Length: 339
Image (tube, rainbow, N blue to C red):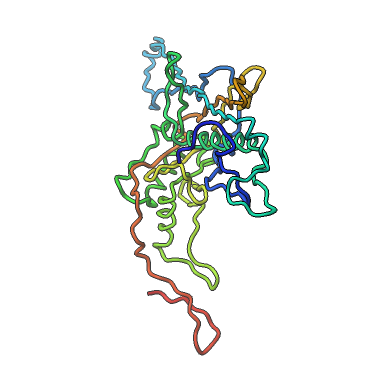
C-alpha cells in the first residue's frame, strides 16, 4: 500500500476513536534471531576462505626424493558485503500537535482519540516500516556497491548470496528427494552440518511440505487431524522449518539458512547512534524530523546455506486416501476408516 505523503495536520490523518488495530504484519523473526555487531566501515567481510589441493596417493621414488618438489602455496580469498541507508521523515503542523482531543472521524459522546500523540504514533509506524524493510532485505537484498555519491549502496541478502548449494526444481512441487539433497549438500559442505539451519519457505511451499506427510496417509485422532511439519528427518540430520512460512520469501523458492553464522551489521553515526530520530530545522508553524540508520547483513560463508529454486507456485490437490474417525454404532469403540 502506498502511504500518503506530506505533513500531519488537523484534517489529515483523520482522528478516530475506538480500539486501534494494525493490518500490516510487523513480525521480523529473522532479524530478531540474528546477533549484531557494530562496524566502522560501510564495507565489511563476510568470510575469508582457502582451499587445499586434491587428495591423492603420493608416488615418490627414493631417487625422486633427493630432489625437492616444486614449491606451492595456498591462495586466500575474501567475501564482503556493504551497509545501506534507511531513511524516513515525518512532519506536523503546530495546529495538529495542539489539537489531540478533537475527533474528525465518527464522533460518539465520551470517546477520545486512540492516538493521543501524533508525533509518537507516526515515528513508531515509520520504525515499524524500517524493521519490515530490514526483514525483507535479509531474504531478498540485491547487492550493489556505490562508487559515486549518486549511486546506491545495497546490502546482499541470503538468496542472492547462495551460489554453491542450489537445487533447481524445474517446476515440480517440493519433494522428499529435494530435502534430502539439501541436507546432503549442507552436511557435506559445512563443518556444522545441519546445526543452525532453518528452512524459510513461502506459504505455498509450506503447503507442499505438509503434503509430503499427508500423501502418505493423514494421521487422525478423535480431536485432531492434519499436519504441521516443523522438522523433517533426513539421513544427514534434521531440517527445521520456520512455522507458517515467511511472507517475504518468494513463491517458488525455499531457503535453508544457517542463521547461526549470520549477523546484523550496524554502522552508527558518531554522537547519535544508529536508527535515531532527530528534529530538522523549523521553517514555519510546524516541525519536521527524520529517522536515519545504516545496516547490512553479514551472511557468512555462502556455501553454509542452500536454496531450492523453480518450485511449483501452486499445489495440486492431494491424492492421499481420506482417513475418517468413526464410532461403532453397537459399541463405544472408535476406529479409523480409509476410503
